[in-house]
Amino acid sequence: MKRRSRRTFISPANLGKLAALLLALAGVYLSPYGPNSGANDNNPDTPKGRVYSATVVRVADGDTITVLADGAQHKVRLFAVDAPELKQAHGLAAQGWLQDQLLNDTVKIAVVDRDRYGREVAKVLRPGQPCEQAVCADDVDINLSLVQAGHAWWYREFAKKQSAQDKALYRQAEEHAQTARSGLWARPDPQAPWAWRAERRKEQNNPDTP
Image 1 (tube, one colour):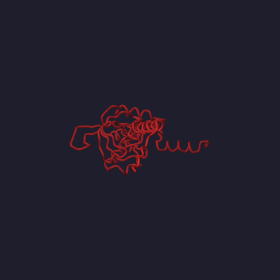
Image 2 (spheres, rainbow, N blue to C red; image 1 turned 60 degrees about the horizontal axis):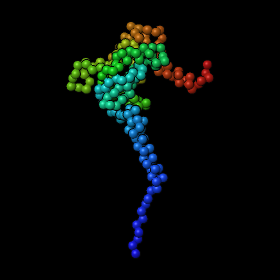
Image 3 (cartoon, rainbow, N blue to C red; image 1 turned 180 degrees about the horizontal axis):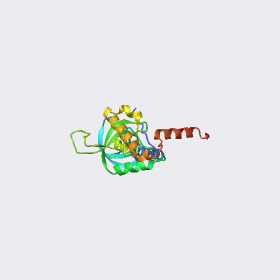
Image 4 (cartoon, rainbow, N blue to C red; image 1 turned 30 degrees about the vertical axis):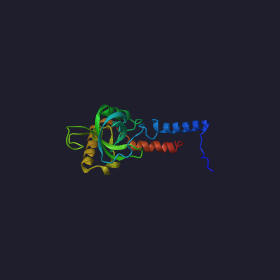
């Protein structure tokens, strides 16, 4: 006796459910906010030491920018400097100076590290005369220029990652800005942004403290 083979049928109701499930899964991966989306930084594993060319598309504050490279956006925190926060005195001035210097311009991003927020920590360079190296002698260090103009502090907490030459340059730049009372140093007693942030955290943790 021959056995009849069983055929598995999907009912119209279950077929509809399956189609809806497949569409929902496709939506996750096609959505601009899904795993393959470009809404966030597409390069979480950018290697330290990498230097790449990019266009500055946004200046968030005095030491944070967004750049576009090869169709992907990168959030970049300028290395070894700390500008006043936007709500601090001189915060908007620092942002405005950096925006005037960089917005819509092509720069080099020399990656040093990646911070806990996923941003690339980098030296931002305005290209000078071309050369055979990734970083050329005529490239302008925007991080250093920010300190020279009095729009940021030299962030000594991260100085250990700087070369001896850069440490000397940044120290001299800050001392010159202080002596000339440039930018934020025109105020009698400017508050360092790390101190300002510490005060805000203390206030948030102790809202009832007078």
